[in-house]
Length: 120
View (cartoon, one colour):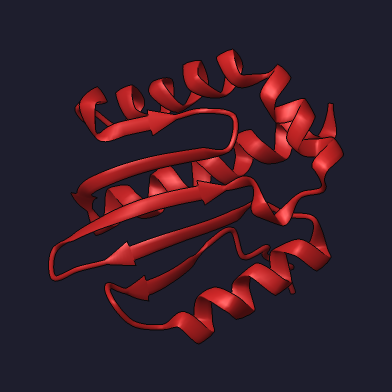
């Protein structure tokens, strides 16, 4: 049996606050990236927020902001997403108005990016 790690949670637009809160608590206790996909009918938004990490880690994110921005833009380019839909800084990465399947791929890549940065 393989052990898979949940990398993000999917919620419907305007709903599922309990799911977001539960996911936040999970991410905070597990010290993993807090990533949410908000789904609409055919499109979705992806959000990573640093809130599940300590202030010390937040400072490390601020020091690595250029890397976060560069890598987030690379994720968008790799999935052929218009760069204007991708916004990144030391506290958040957001990608708006993309297909649900692309959102899942991007969320997974963002999880891997933030996990890699927090291991260093």
